[in-house]
Image (cartoon, rainbow over all chains, first blue to last red; front, side, top):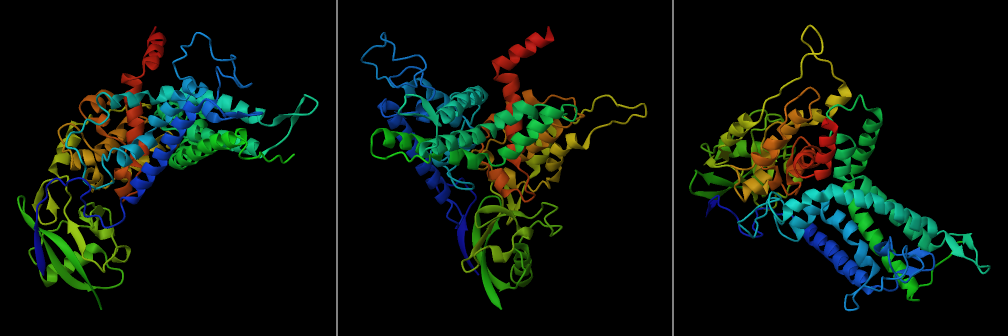
Amino acid sequence: MASNLVSITRRGFGQTMRKDNWWVAPVLTFIGLGAFVVYSTWAAFQGAHYSFGNYLSPFYSPELFGNSPHALFGPPPSWLPTWLPFSPALLILWAPGGFRFTCYYYRGAYYKSMWADPPACAVGEPRHNYRGERKFPLIIQNIHRYFLYLALFFLLFLAYDAWHAMWFAGPDGKEHFGIGLGTLVLTANVICLGLYTTSCHSLRHLIGGVYDVLSNKPIRKKAYGCVSGLNKRHMLFAWISLFVVGFSDVYVRLCSMGIFQDFRFF
Amino acid sequence: MAKATFSIRRGGREMAEMVDYTTDVTEGMVVLDAVHQIQAESAGDLACRWNCKAGKCGSCSAEINGMPKLMCMTRLDTIDITQPVTIEPMRAFPPVKDLITDVSWNYEVKKRIKKFKPRKPDADDGTWRMQQEDIDRVQEFRKCIECFLCQDVCHVLRDHEKHQEFIGPRFLVYTAALEMHPLDTENRTEDLKELFGIGYCNITKCCTKVCPEGITITDNAIIPLKERVVDEHYDPLKKLIKLFRKK
């Protein structure tokens, strides 16, 4: 029988009695999210190499104003100050970015990995003060459902982009149906983003969770069941869609820069 | 016969010490068995709360190797016994003696939650009718054994000691069971926001991870309640729609 003195007091940052590798998950999350934020910010500010033929990078979709043939309203407005850095992505990327930033899964993930609040379950924290999401600024997280509405709207554009990626300009000047590797990438992108968006906790609530009785609303009940089923894998869809959307931009960018040759199946 | 060392917190409210005990371990043993063996062999005064030994009473909650767990459900073959196994009381509640904590705060919290208030009976004999599919959602919450491991792991209580402002995952689950009940007519969203501090939860999902009953606390109880609070307090569009519907 041996002994050493301890008292139950608040533990300091990173202090714990856990003996497992509790730091691995937050470190991986930090690296994954950090890499995506750095790359997407860099890509958004480039304003170039975001389209290649019928392919359009999802970071730039919908392209409201821009110099590519995908622009919905033509080139950038002439009244824009020249000193202002312009990129079509800057006009729209705040919407999907806001959807991810306020997502219930990502909130839990980055509070832990980037803010150490807490670093992991049953591990000591660096700060004594805690306001949670009760007060400004984090009370703004409650806006999530509005970003959901925007994300659902954006899915329509991404689905159109995937469809548009199946039509290649032929030597006769007409568009012909075809499938390239980029087509598959952009199609996988909209599917993954679709799964992530439709597995959202807010959508689950709005579509049926808000009601205590669903037996008298058969369509809502079915929809609630579907979203609930997807919601169980929300974390998985969050990571897969994050990777695929980033990869889609990389693919289009490399093709546009001539570094990679798009492979045409037919 | 294999031996294992258990480092157990011994002491009262103020000071305590981690004391190492070595005992024989056999196949199929759980941590609670080892604690009982240590009580029998070398520490007759070791205080430990237990009852069913089947993971149903929620009495033997403790922190094993730093993670909140039920001692009776933690098999020794699931942990590394080549190193001393630490056993501590729950940190979110005041220690009483050795592995026992004072969890009475939880019972006081429960009293503050508005009780079940059913609608008028559906039939003349004073009974109600409801569909199984409508009650299925809250059935999960009824599995709670009140072991308070979720309260213990929640950093809002454990590290920030917001016991006065936050009711903790266990009672958010309890509130969800009432709030989502198809017969209940009471509205608890104002209380959730103002008195029960649901905004303190930052969705770390630690409560879900430690629940011995496998209740999906965060996704199925806390987030739906957060969304109901958003409906009533943070969604201007919803408020506008409600206003027009009333007219």
